[in-house]
Length: 296
Image 1 (cartoon, rainbow, N blue to C red):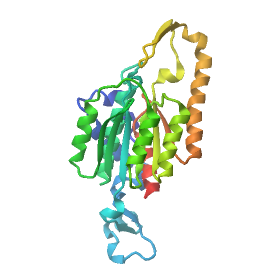
Image 2 (tube, rainbow, N blue to C red; image 1 turned 180 degrees about the horizontal axis):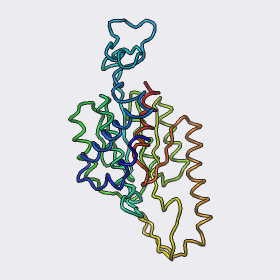
Image 3 (tube, helix red, strand yellow; image 1 turned 30 degrees about the vertical axis):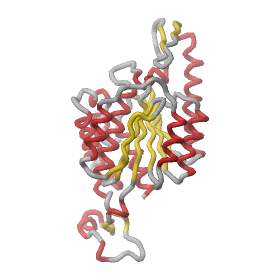
Image 4 (tube, rainbow, N blue to C red; image 1 turned 180 degrees about the vertical axis):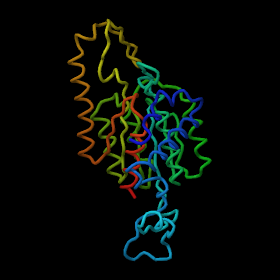
């Protein structure tokens, strides 16, 4: 992965504000792209497409041909513009952290970085913040100044009560009229079948979908060395246990939970990406760019 060593969540979380974090992630990622095999879908190509039969020669970008030895056509705004929708889960379960970065902070940095990258590519991006209901809904815009609006709302998130994903997905799917790219960022702690039905609603409407499944490393491993009091951040329910007694069964359950989402999403032609909060953010941006390239 390009430049992964400087894009770790721990390093990025030390920066002062979300705008600086997003810029640091995206600019560092782009520098890495120029030094890696990923260069083929670098951001500088976002306003071009390969030359094809029927294209007018006058639209060829000759400077780009000189750099790449390939013919690319300059695309006009109506050709390149894609409307993307960031759906960010701000429920209380997202506030969990076993180390320095919570799931919610990781999700904020990811969403901010994606927004920064999309607007850099002149795509329109909107934002929905939700828990058990939609708390913020900002329609997509492609102006650079729109980024400040998005970041301001993400910077001041107040975590809500509980996770209720499916109704939000259905409500949002019905409200979006034109085909776009839906990006769900959540820990998916809700009924899997309900969530998958909601995601399928977007596919039925013709949208492309990416799911970024955010989990804390301890939620995957349950690797505690002493007796622990566990408290459900949403219900407040508590239990005291010796984790090593249940660790094996727990890990099997979590593996099944993640693999179930992964396999069912694949069946529905939905991109599923599991991210631990200690995972470098360039992986997520790479997944987005590959999806963006396929969407066209």
